[in-house]
Image 1 (cartoon, helix red, strand yellow):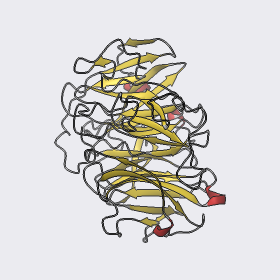
Image 2: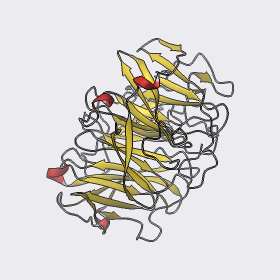
Image 3: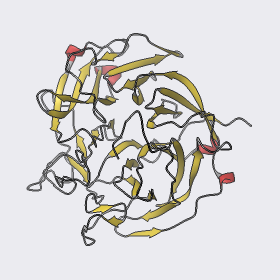
Length: 403
């Protein structure tokens, strides 16, 4: 599915029962399970905060300040309960700087783990100067400043893009201090350029780089394909269609990804160093267009069917906050085409519980949501509390459900 369309025709989508997959290092076994009874699921509400122009992401800096992104190219600072009127970073005001089209635009930022000392953060945006490409750029700012000078930009890397969809677009520093970059297959449908399994292409991969060098970037010593001939050394994992939002569990360090499917299956993956997640020979645990079943791939920990109609998963976070005890340890994610919010619990290598915790069409599970939303992202603050970002404009804080 093409992400981030303001007007969608998919809101009446009927979602099939979940299918849970159990994953191990060398053997993967698929099991079909019923959803966890709603009475056993955590209950949450979505508390409205403010509206933005096509918001795409939320992140905090090491000091705890929150930042919310607008797809046209602005980063907005939220501090002391108020949204600053002047953008923290404004790339939208620079002519022809950011290309805004479907999934193109400003898609994420990531603060350096030592931001308080070095003032460095990184942005992922698209441009057409002269051809469509993803830009990974570094900016420098006083760590306490409220406005960034765009002229401090240092372009770290660029990746050519064939179409305007399937950008992935997220940056995040891992517990190892390296920068992870989620890249979609570049777009159109059914991976026409076969980027998914092409080891020389950076598209359809999870990348990992070292931003320490002041020119370009470095390759971490333990990147799995660093010394393998005909493999791009930046690749950390391969075979992702459109990894729309990923996060590291603050407690376990596991890397969760929501990978958007083609016609039938949406999936949640745990990304491992050197892992192959199947696209485009497989969609979820199933062959795609005659793809090989002999290729070793890692199954998703969780997948759900949309019966051939459009659907689009939005990856989230494992909740590690304190305000909603019943949600602790649950991975919270969304469904862009329906505005629903789901949660699953992954323990000892398997999903032990799963279900819908917000349904805009169910008056008993609306969670405070008045209208169907399109969750383009979730956000996590320094205390582990979560936010839901609706691409139509609203930003919500996730809070405990009222009695």
